[in-house]
Image (tube, rainbow, N blue to C red; front, side, top):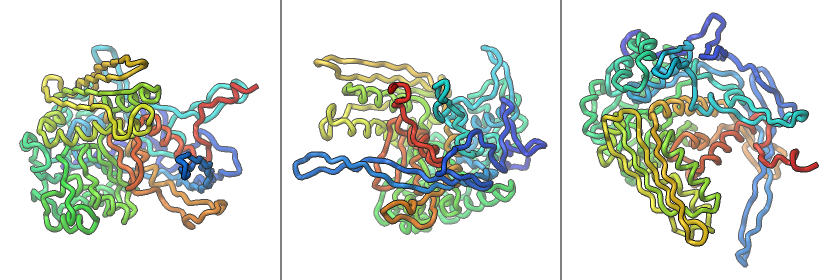
Length: 548
């Protein structure tokens, strides 16, 4: 490949399919259904799945006496899913980093069905850690055996297979991906040897570098940068052109861009600068110092119509960026990959509070030795991470007025230290201190060793697959409703809150609540997919086993 090449890790075999390590096939041109829904509310054509879905919820008001009044509500929606799976490109900002090199090598290994030796025996390529590729969804119950029928999550809707992705991207370091993979020190040497030839031909495109936004200790990497140290429309246009060139060169139907680069400092929200779409565009034109590289990438993607996902904790999506995305009906999602310690925290806190146990303090300590840790050793960049890791319990606390008075909140502290010796094997220590029955206490201590990039890489894949899927789903309110709705089909809101399961600090549409509870996030993802094929939400009532 030429310099600044991309990886067509999804090139087809002789039958127009690509194969994973288990030999299963996926097709870009269509989707072989694993199941069909037999219902008058669901119709199938060669091009689409159309469904009518009744959404049931409860509206709660408060009367003059302070008594709650709960009223069941029903709305009927029409969903339409495009069944044709396009050829998709994934462009990563920070392609030469730990996450970028690991996910690229992983997709190559899966496509080629690689097996390699380790000290613990042979290992084969897989997609463990991916919700979409590694988990299942309950389809229903077999009426004879009364057993649940579960299917791979990937087969609920016609989705892109990660083996088919074409990968490219940008990096401030011009190192080819084989050398960058060695620098990351994440993968086994026996695996690296099998993908090294291909990855040596992959070289990131030059990226933008504004020294004020990342730690000074990253300066020695910045040898592959677009000229200019502040935001400019020239940078926006260069990124847009890179996306267009990548798309055309590889014959792609869609390109999805994801920020996998270093954590930036928080940008100040300044009226007249980044608080509206027009102000933000003007600030970029004027080279304002509070416009970050990630926001410039986001603006370029919004204007180009390429979905953009922020995998780091900084406030990429300033109010002006969100307004711009809404104006252009462009998809955005963020923030910060939720892979290890924070995912455990959001599950455990949800469990404790739902069990009626009053959590009073959380102390989280991390030490890691990869380049992310090096960058986070700078206080301004650490502050971005501290915010994203600290807010994950807020909605769960606010939902329980029995345990917590208004304004009451558990003490919560987060510490991150850079220890080069541990490399990508991050150590996460957490102590949860809780109040229990009759003034007693419970303390839970967790020591979690997270192979950071091996946990984050499947999330990068999930975010791309789900985002692409959302570009092929449209909806409208059915004529069966008593209320007026959009007469024409339209897409989901620009802010893809459905991605929350994979992100620490979920971005939601303005004015809507943030949900951090892991089970609720997974339930939303599952049930939206079910609605698209006309199936009711998953129910754990199992009345068929209880009523005779």
